[in-house]
Each structure stands twice: as C-alpha cells, then as structure tokens.
Image (tube, rainbow, N blue to C red; front, side):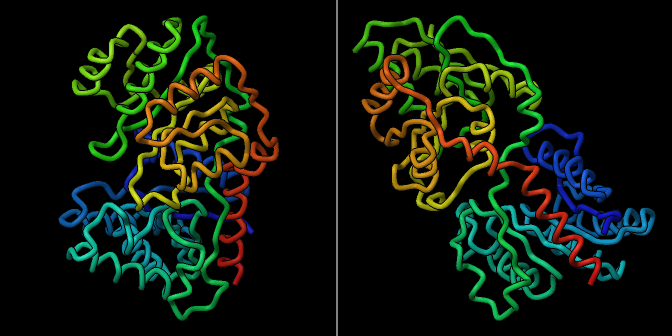
Length: 359
C-alpha cells in the first residue's frame, strides 16, 4: 500500500531546530516506503490560531487528496487538529505520541492545561485508528492499559533512533587537541553544565594538563561563562551557536568524547532523549552527567557506549576525563548501531499506515 499522508505539525521541514529536522527526516524516509508526506503547519498562537490552523489542514487535505492523517505532539492540541481533520476528510487517523500528553513532567498536574491534556489523551486513545508511541519517552510500558481499548490499537515503536544513512555518509571533523563536545540545549535549574565545569576544573588541578578543548554548540549564557572563568578553565572552553543538523554530524563524529547532561529530575527517569541517538550515530564515547539510576545511564553502560558521572559529583567527571584520555577502550555492542535507527522506526510507521488504510 502507498499513498499520501497529511502530517499535522507545528514545525515545517524547512524550519530550523531539532523538531523540524525530525519532520524533514520523517517525510524523506516515509517516501522511501511509498508514502508521500504533505505537512499542514499549525504554528503559534495555538489557541487563537486554532481555527486558522484547522482550515489550513482541511484545505491541504482536500487539495492533496490525502489517504490518511497523522498528528504528532507536542503540543498536544495537534492531535485535536488531526482528529477533526480526519473526520472531515473521512480518512484514517494515526496519532503519534512523541511526548507524554496527560502526564508531561513539565506541567502542573492540577492546572487547567493538564485537564485539557487528559481529555485530548482520552480522545486519542479511543478515537484514533491507531496510536503509536516511541519506547524511550517518559511513559512506563504498561501506561495505556488504563484505557479499555483493543491492545492492537496502541503500538509501541522502538526508540526513534538516528538516521544511519546520513551519519554513514557524513565526513568527520579533525581536531588536533583532545576534544569534548556538547550539542543541544540547556534548561535553567534542570539541565545545566555546572557539574561538568567543576569536573573540568578538578581534572586540570589533578593532572596539570590543559591540552583539552570543551566545545558547546547551542545554548550558552553569561552565568555559564562566569562559571568557567571562576573555575579557571575559560581558555579550554569554546562556544558556538546552534548549527544545522548536517553541519553538526561531522563535529560529533570527529570529537573524542561526547558530553551528555541529563540532570536528576525524576520526571526524566524513563527518558531516552533524541540527543542520545545522534550521539549513538556518531559512534564516539559518551560522558553522561546524569542520575545513575536513570534509564539513559543504564542504556549507555549496558551497551558499552561510555561512562556515567553522577550529576552532583564533579570528581566523577574528572575521573571519567582521566579514563577517556588514558586507558578507556571504546568497545560498544555493535548491534546498537543497527537496531536504533530512524530508518527502522520509519519502516514500522509505514507498516501501520498500510494497515489502517487497507482496512
């Protein structure tokens, strides 16, 4: 089976940022399975802009003669757009849960927004022809058992993974100095680089070595800069703005160590974030500064992908840096590079689209 699918998203494939890159990748990979993807853009403001977004979805769907509608959250109202559009067009509706809806860890559980999210989640599970959700988001495996719906309606997909073809084809940056690279965002009070900065200071004090570079692509602010200056490591740190995904891939592949900062917020205990998959695709050792009890820490250690330092332990960061430079052997489980790919997850989604349109 093949056809045209309408993808309801708050990002266009040509926009900047990680979510837009995922939309562009999904569009390209589904077309390899015979599914032409057209995107209905539903940008902010989400509430006052809802009627216009719905009209845009309907116009695009009618014009393109779509065979199915797919909606992806966040934000969760995109699923309401998907539902209304699919009913008006009389096409199957596939709801893709990319983040928790009713139990999102960043949302007050008693807020009106959460009440609305719970209502949308019930709508999704009961009305969508199929619901797919990725292993690795902050939901337990048995989460959807609370709903009295057929088991086959809700399909768990493997983690989103990395785009293997893109990483295989990309070049590799060449660095003369031992280099640690972080690529992505920071979040105040949650995911911040202070433990790594303190660990880098400890490493320099312990070893006396300064032939190391830590480079950060993405968020950086004055507080972080003051922290590296107080630690006496400002000359070891380089900062860069966000760059397009195709430009960061060679950087990741060429670095000596990839820095992951995951914090210790219990809401992220089950999370396998999208940043992790780019790091997996780069096939370079990972230094994870994260609560060791989190799933991402277990994943990295189980597959031999790097070392874990507790988020409150700068000494552990220094220990890891010493190990990476001295005697660490990067011998990961090679199956991880074949199993966790976007090509694989796109194939599964194409199969679900085939199922709901054939039936």
